[in-house]
Image 1 (cartoon, rainbow, N blue to C red):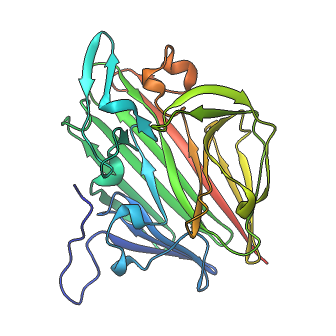
Image 2: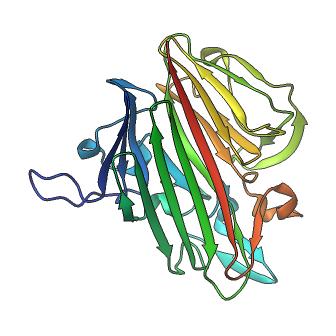
Length: 294
């Protein structure tokens, strides 16, 4: 499902692009889910990074897009405008569909230059998502930051539910810490579907001491990520954030998302961030990672 590379021996994989600005280098793999293979300052990874020609799948990437929904879609089914729909398994044996379809499919390279690139994916209705849409990611690199925009347009002949986001992986280093203003977090059941919202006074501490795997609300759109190498500022125009700090992994995740996990099955999906896009209507999300080397 688009999670393998196409290449000619001795040549760069199809869809591999590199952008450069100052000391920053960004490697993209359009063919592997429109993902970021790696992001470096000099030779030091800012995100969990793999050289383009070594990346074997989007799940091993530095960051991949979440479109047309983020996180879990409960038990691979939903009801929309009076009709029942099903989706397919797309994340090992997870009982839910996860993270949409964009990260599983090859994207086209519409344009690229030394410090900018535009990727596009056009979805045809299938067993994984029943509505057509067109989406583009715009990557721009300057000497101090990575800027990403993603726009989705409903190309179906009826309204469809839509969510956007990104799934960046940050390397866990000695001194890795997070500082994020939020107001609430969603608690999940045993199958990782949200069941209730509770007050949360914010996130501020060493990643090694955090035990988080939650969607947070009341996010003001800025997060500070720090370690002995960098001070990073993550900002976005979306209002929710998934934070995942596994104790047994060499990474942690801070994911800007537009809606609560499984919002599509909630009583009021749009109140929980899901967008109802009419035919021809578009929705855009943005993410910036500002980099200060220490």
